[in-house]
Length: 316
Ligand SMILES: NC(=O)c1ccc[n+]([C@@H]2O[C@H](COP(=O)([O-])OP(=O)(O)OC[C@H]3O[C@@H](n4cnc5c(N)ncnc54)[C@H](O)[C@@H]3O)[C@@H](O)[C@H]2O)c1
Image 1 (spheres, helix red, strand yellow):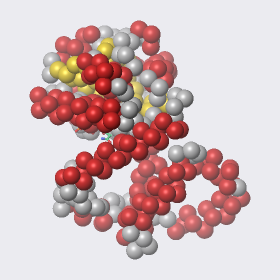
Image 2: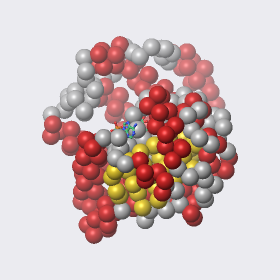
Image 3: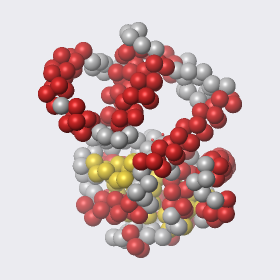
């Protein structure tokens, strides 16, 4: 298998939100990056997103204008699949649909060299199932990044049933080479680790609002000003050790029974979904946004992530 020192050409599939952000990570570390997308419209959107992200990075003094221009020049966009023949490493970030992903991989894995590691950024589809379409599935694994990946360090590396340990080691070494934090997920369970934790929290947040215990804004504030700040520094197990396992045990013994164990999507979220309120992309979700506010909240989030990343993760 091609190891990290032999990886130069990264092929990213999908010029969307994730693909463009991933391209910036690798180009920023000196890799040659090609983004393949199925449509010209997808590529046009991708180029615009790259410009927006780089503008924020320059304004935040994350990167000089000169280096930003160089970074952009290292990223090629194409609708031609022949670039797969030159790939040293592939990250797929196309739509979250099993059939579309399998169809893509059946074709692409025939085109790349057999010693190239192949990864999918699926949020939670089965790695083992996607691998059924992949030629030489032992070199295929999940590489799950967090939006926006050029600002968030975590990468979940997920083993499918057929994935070689050697494949996982190459993915982890590459993540470290681009100054990210890989975490191995030993079992291909739905949602991996990050989304299982995230959705357990979301279910309880919806339960609290539906039962009128607090409003959305106050739940968001509990996270931002309390739990979020804590979890940026220590995880749940460290929290228990530092707070006293005896106390956490006693609270668990009466509180777990009170928490939501809802198996369906709660009504509060279902209603918004059914009326087409998808959040910033439609101007309304749990909150409402004017067009100008949409850009403002995204830029504010990115500026805050950048500052936090500098403060906490500069040693990666
Ligand atoms: N957005 C997130 O927060 C997030 C976070 C982690 C993982 N993911 C995962 O990353 C993947 C991509 O998500 P996104 O938000 O970037 O999507 P997106 O909709 O922004 O972009 C998807 C891109 O893929 C292109 N595409 C679709 N089918 C294709 C094909 N067969 N071949 C080549 N290109 C194709 C589309 O034209 C589009 O440009 C999904 O699997 C998603 O679950 C997303």
